[in-house]
Image (cartoon, rainbow, N blue to C red):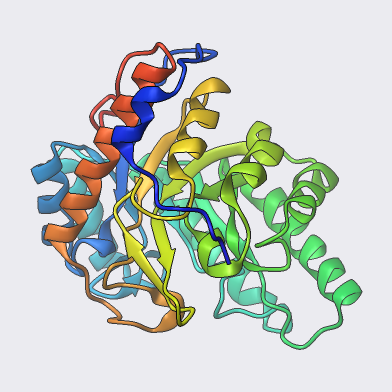
Length: 315
């Protein structure tokens, strides 16, 4: 587990500015069901932050691809009426609930559904993972993951989508070399990486060096921070106050000219992979975590001699 001390935004003042490759003006977004299970609550939390970008995972506890056509059409309509854009769809493809021994047709079907729905939502990014082993030995596990993601990437490319593999569950979830093996070996413009700043605390690796190895392939970022208690349990805290190295991650993004979005995933009440408070969120905590990220981005922008964040506006 990470043993780094908690970061202090105030302590950044002593750091030397480093000029960014381009102005660090990331769009700010949030995974909506971390704020509320219902779409109204998700949009209300964004409005309190004055952000206009949403990452969709579930509405009323139902994953986007599992919604019926009527419910999805109404969801898309309400998002549009609110003047909100969708920056990414967090799918279940290859996630903690779908081992490599499971029925691949389920993932193919989900991608087919999302291809149609992403077109209506105006987004190209679909979050995926790389399958728990399901008991397969390492070599067979890796081969099966490569085969599946290669096929999915071909389908995504045909549909104009980009699959963003997250450093989370699966064969490549905790290993930078495996993630690079996937994106360079499959060699498709439709397969890139999603970097989560906080997953390393729970999984025992440091985020900043992992990001430096992957930075050229990262198209989307989830922001969370965490601390490990003496008993080994992991708790989630506002960005910049934990052990995940969020400040260093943001500086690396700034210095490499990252121009994608930062999407908050506070994990205070909703942790789907743990089954905790399924279908619940917390609007107040979501907003507090959003403001914490705004402060960090503004400070990192200052340190890298660049303007501050776009305040959630699509760029």
